[in-house]
Length: 190
Image (cartoon, rainbow, N blue to C red; front, side, top):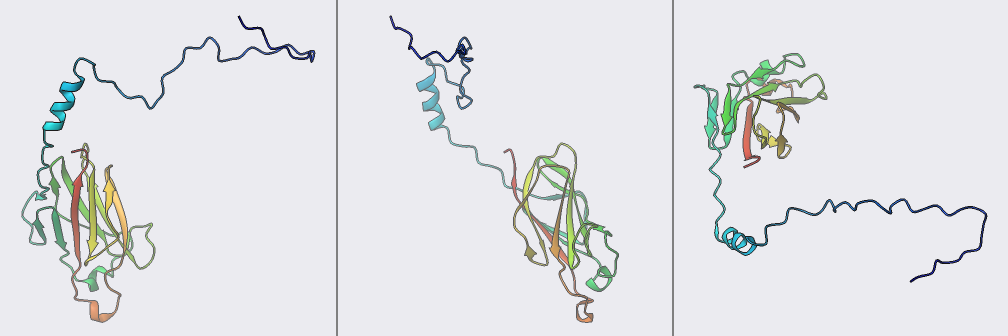
């Protein structure tokens, strides 16, 4: 039996606590709990089962193309025009690669904007990846003549990346080739 704490009267009636009478809610950090009858058996089986190895990533072309070479997870697209012609195209003009894919992301295509997409800064080209609907997310890296800006992830239908132009516009680079490379690093969700 506890007596209430006596406080001097201030003329204001004390307010009841708002949390009394509420049903407590579980902590959001609580996860599912295994059945006590299966606990030791499931834990032992999970420890014994080796993780299934992931199949290697292989890029597949939808048709033959003399400008594209594929080696496992790597696609190299050598643009048919030299830099002299490519550098004269207007901003937001692009050339597209043949269609290709990997497992769980079958319909993909690259686009190369020699003078950048409409939002690119001067002195930058743009490489875009367009993917079909219901494609798995992928982690990849683009290289333009061997220069990249690090791994990227595409979860949606399109990815655009701006890269420094592979050459300046001097006459000595007019006949040089541009090679766009895409290295698929991981298929997400596997």
